[in-house]
Image (cartoon, rainbow, N blue to C red; front, side):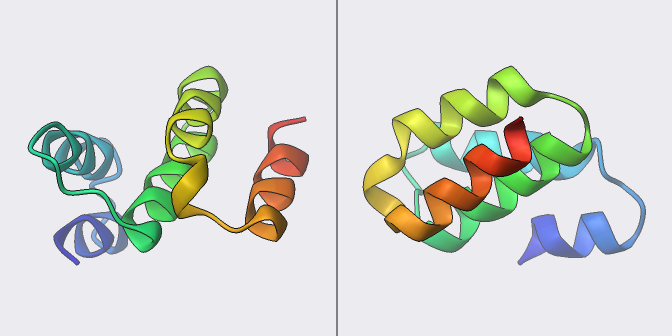
Length: 73
């Protein structure tokens, strides 16, 4: 929720850092993974977004994975 708030406040650089910090502590969920991928794509960090998608494929539906792959092209 804090990462989404940061994004809304135009603090886009901080939001992915917060999400990555949480991931390193073991906090992984479908919604936070999708938010991180979205933020990374918007920032132009396509390789990192693809890495998150690959690492967290078990948290995202096949349809959502296809949508992310389409955005990465």
